[in-house]
Amino acid sequence: MIGNEPEEGNSDLVIEALEHRIRIQAILRFIYIPIALLVALILVALTVYHFGISSVTIAMPTIITICGFGVAFVGAFWDFGARKYLNSLANSRIMFTEKDITMINKQQLQLTLIYIGIAGLYILAAFFIYMFL
Image (cartoon, rainbow, N blue to C red; front, top):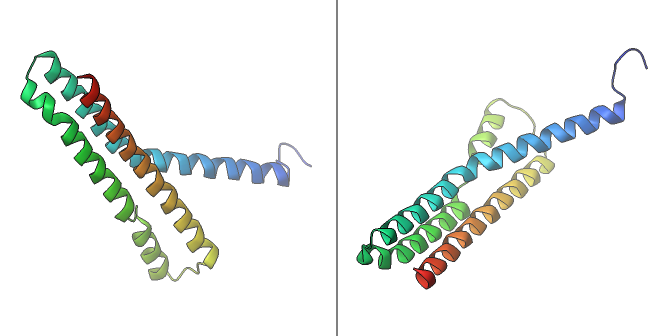
């Protein structure tokens, strides 16, 4: 080994760590909007409850539940950019293997499950608002 050159095993670990970090950042980029919407809806419900507007307070659990089903629907049927990625690979004539397709499908499944989990948080928040407000 000459100078500060990383060993072969270490460079693979560094590359794997960077790929994992990029993957996590991409997932977080996709879940910011539904989480922010949930927080906003909860804040609206608490604000309306604080000012005593009971008609809106009664409707908020229903609104939050409908938004939760919307988030689950988006998570189940949105391709998260995979179609555009595959089209760009095909247009640039880059070969991709079955392993690439499997990786893309696995990542889409992870994002779908995350969106369904966020939808569960919506429904749980609606339940707590219904029970305690």
